[in-house]
Length: 348
Ligand code: KG4
Ligand code: ZN
Image 1 (cartoon, rainbow, N blue to C red):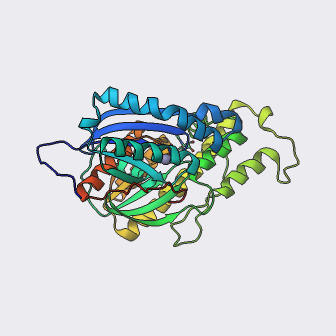
Image 2: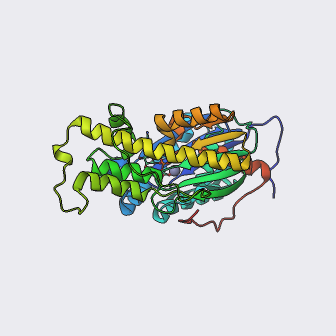
Image 3: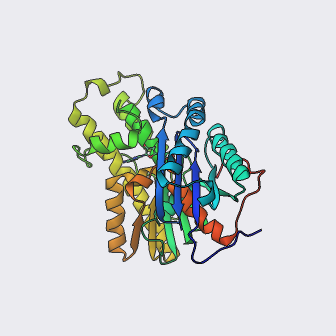
């Protein structure tokens, strides 16, 4: 049954996000009016492992979910009576982390007698590019670059997405994290590499740009990670780890050269997809979208090809629940609700 849509009344949605190491809740009205956004991250707990440990992430989700939702409701000064629907990112992600949010969202929807809305985490990342300017000119090509995924989508509206290509091995963010770990820079690696790269020469080293053939819209980032590893440890991997002996300048040059190679591939593939789709608009979202070099290279490409680039605002590039509640508004308007039997799913 469709909830009544009254033109004069705002639609206010509680969004919940627990797909990996962030626990997030947000209250958003009419898709773009952000009334609260709360994010608790367990990233610091994963730092010594150089990557997310699922068991630790899941425990942190359980600890954080209740206070995070309470804070989001309090900050927005709303109660259950003001909420029209509960939205949850139920895929993709770590199943043992997703299940915490899915169970909580189902419980709240049941107790409050509100509709439940299931959101694809990647589609929500794309939606965050539309927060500032919801009326995009279609067709659009969207690049979603995160720690777990790197994909290109054709998009005619927030709910109409077709995947054009994705990574065949590491995600772009994962490559940033792994290279940061090789260079002994702090986790998460993306911001660390970006910071180190500021003082480096992006042309110092020529790391491989894997294009996977003339027509491919897929990505591969495991080769570049290995190239950096060989560079630091020698081709046979038997040499000493040279990183400890490297100067800050040498580290900066590797970081800048690595970042330049990843950005070049991302921009070229996005242009390839946009040319093929005759796209008028480009969308950029996901954690790696916070990267200034990527944002400015895509902006240059958009200017040169006379396309409009819409980028997720920085606070909503990495995982958050605003993007979940924002996309849920479109599903609410379309009457696309989930059953109480909703399950988490690791795959997209
Ligand atoms: O979207 P996100 O929060 O989580 C996933 O859905 O995976 O993305 C996290 C990823 C991490 O790999 C992190 O290193 C990367 O985004 N990241 C960045 C930057 N900020 C975060 N990568 C490059 N430059 C950044 N400034
Ligand atoms: Zn994400």
